[in-house]
Every structure is written in structure tokens, then in C-alpha cells.
Length: 200
Image (cartoon, rainbow, N blue to C red; front, side, top):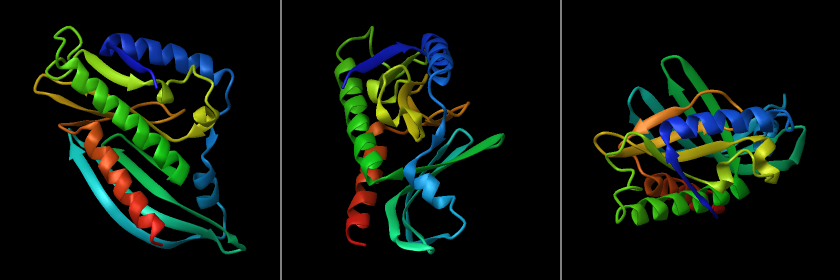
């Protein structure tokens, strides 16, 4: 999985350009779990809040849950609901088990990239408010099958004091920056969710 390192300004311009190009080819659509949750007879069979990340006016809540369509009881999915909110916006994202596994792998790649950058001052993002690390799994110009879904995009970005996480819903405008959080912490929360889901 390739790492993407760029300045925050460069990343913003490239992401905007990439999103414009990708949107001309990909029609945004709900993820499989979000599509199930939107069904008129869908209901939550089980749920458990896994954790929260809060700071900079942004609140992120992760909830493990099982959703079932009452009209078709065999249609049941397990996953995580990610609620992103700030004063002027909010977003709700659903990740099924496959998407969770993919996201954890990407977060581990980002964390490893951040660690490697510590030995190179020119690439080190901690304390550098103009740099971010991302991975190809979240880059819109790659023709991944999941690019069309409204799922979670993540990058680690530097701040004057350290670093934080930039979260956004794929194919949705805007982002939610949570300072003083790491890819490793979010990966651990998602892995906890997977453990709980496997026992329900």
C-alpha cells in the first residue's frame, strides 16, 4: 500500500482536483451497510459504543452494531457506525466488516509511515502544520471497487504541537480534524469493534 506525503495546501488542491475527476466517473452511493440501514424495515439488533475522539470542536463516535432488515431477516450485517460532528456539519458513515479490516490496514500503514518520517526532518509531520500522510487506499484516483461508496477517508496531519487525524466521508465535501489523535488509536478502536462483532 503506497503512502502519500504532501503539504496541507498541496494535498487540498490535489484532493479537490482528484475528487472532481473521480466524481465525473463515479456516482457516489451508500456503502452496502448504509444501504441496508436506509431500508424502511431495517432496525438495530445489537449495538455497543466502542469509543470517542474529541477535540478542536470535532466529535467522533464509533459504535459497533448489527443491522437487520425485518422484511428479510436473513439480510443482516455487522459493522461500525462512525458519527462525525462539528458546529457547522455532521456525517454518518457505516463500515461493514470488510471495510473495517481494510481501514485498519490503511491506518497501520499511515502509522508506520509517520514513524519512518521521524528520522527525516524534511518528511516529519509532527510539529509541522503543513504536511499530511495518507495512503493509496483512500485516494480517489485509484480505481478501487470501494471508491464509489460513502465510507471513511483518513489522513494524519501535523499541527504546531504534534499531529492529529483528518477524517472525511468519501464523496462528501468537508473534513473533520481531531488534534492529538493517532492512526494507531483509531485502528485499535476498530479492532476492538471487530472483536465484539465476532462474538455477536
